[in-house]
Length: 134
Image 1 (cartoon, rainbow, N blue to C red):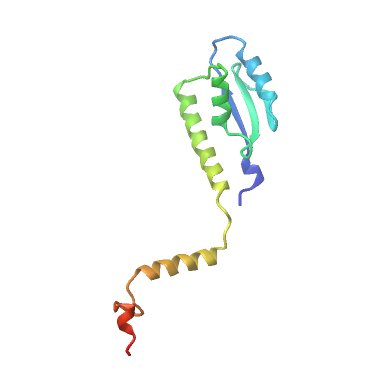
Image 2: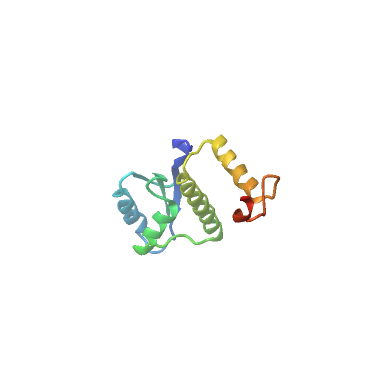
């Protein structure tokens, strides 16, 4: 089971320098989202967002921003970093959907199914109607 703190993410969204004023607009827009904390970032064209993977992903936030007309920084460093974060968050979200099962029960079922597929001493190729002697 995932730790709650592993699901809380703090990411930086970096915008391009043009058009001017988009940081303030993006701050207002993201501040209006429930369960999303927004701060101005360390660099002049960035915002720091804090969210839970139960509610948001960086990919979803950035797609929403670009649909609203905001321009993100597409330098190679930021683009590669974004793709890695998208992948990691997507994997974590998929892993959240996996039910927790008892290891012993699951392991036993796997071996029983595998054993049934293999020919073994208990297997009889004789058709059922020919097995009964009357």
